Structure formats: C-alpha cells, structure tokens
Length: 240
Image 1 (cartoon, rainbow, N blue to C red):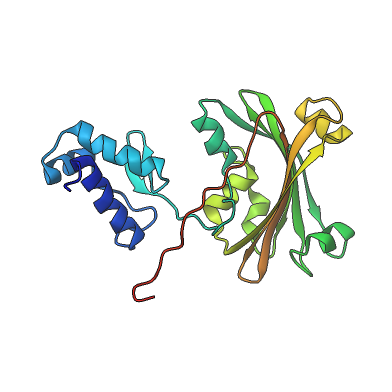
Image 2 (cartoon, rainbow, N blue to C red; image 1 turned 90 degrees about the vertical axis):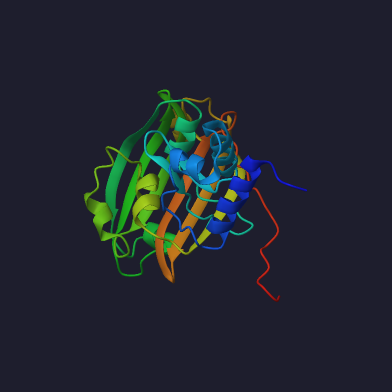
C-alpha cells in the first residue's frame, strides 16, 4: 500500500532523526527545498512538518525554519518543562518575577539537605512565574555554584533560572517528586490564593554525572496546570 506523499516525507525525516542522521538542533531543508525534492505543493510539505512537530521531533520557528528538537532526556519519566515555552504556546504572555536571591554558605542545614555541593556555595533563587500577569507558579531553587559558577552573574532579565539552566547546562540524570498539597500562608500570598487552596507541588533534582546541579521546589495553581507524560515502547537494537 502506497503512503500519501505527506506521510512519506514525514516518515523519511523521522527515520533520519531517530537514526541520528539529523542531529538535535540541526536545521531541516526549507519548505521550498522540500517541495523541489519531492515535487509537491507547500501544503503537502507543511502537513508533513506539522505531524513531525506534533510528535515532538522538530521545532518550527517563525521566519527561522524547522529544527530537530532536543531528545527527551527522561525514559518513562516526565521531561523537564520550560515554563516560558509552555505559557507562550498557550498564547499567553510570560514573565518571571524574581523575589529573592542569596548565597547559601556550605555547611548550613539548607545546603546539607540539598546535597548539591559538599564544600561549595549554593545560589538560592526564589520567584514567581506569571501568565498574562497572573501567578501560575512560585519556586525556590538552589544551584550549585561549584557546578555552575557563571549562574552567580546572571540577572535573569530575559530567562527564568530554570530556562537559563535548560539552555546552558547539560544534565544526565533527574529525579522528580509530585504531590497534591494545600497552599501554605507563604505560597498563598505569592500565588494570590486562599490559604489551603489546592496546589500541585513538584520537587526536582538534576545531576551531571555524579555532580549535583540544582534542586527546585515549585507550587503550581492546582486549577491552572497539569503534568502529562507520554510513553512509548523502547527501541530495539538491531539483532536484539
């Protein structure tokens, strides 16, 4: 059975991505180039690229083209979300409001609990993520300055701390804990909720090899946010 042309285009590009022929971040041929390669209309090419984007394999950037997406770093786990990207994709304006920033010296109870750097300083950052100027989540984050010394100089005017880390600091392992909690007095004040209102609580730690990078605790407005994990069968190696 012959595949529709848009499915053929999608399948061939998908195969190139999954086999490593096209690497994460690399630019795909332009729509015009693909039209010439396959002898088809722009609509056919656009349909194929939309399917690839919907599957999370490519990113389509306005006026820049299409690029191979970063691979999902979690296997059978939640990926680390970029809240700014998620909010913008919902058609809302994003803003991060920094509320606290301080250096945590080594040896303090807070540093020992985080377990990020035995002898090094930690950067503590707190703030609120807003969508259309309405609080969506508040977070408190510890970052190992031994692992990420350049973090100390970042003003976070353009990127939130989490978004900056995703863009600049590779990680190899992550652990996520999720719970449903009632808003404490402090969380309620930051999110403009009633004390006791339902919140989604996420605690995440990341490592680069054996080196801890960050620990973040986030409270989301329970009625405004959800986490979704999509699973699929593991790829079998040839001959396995």
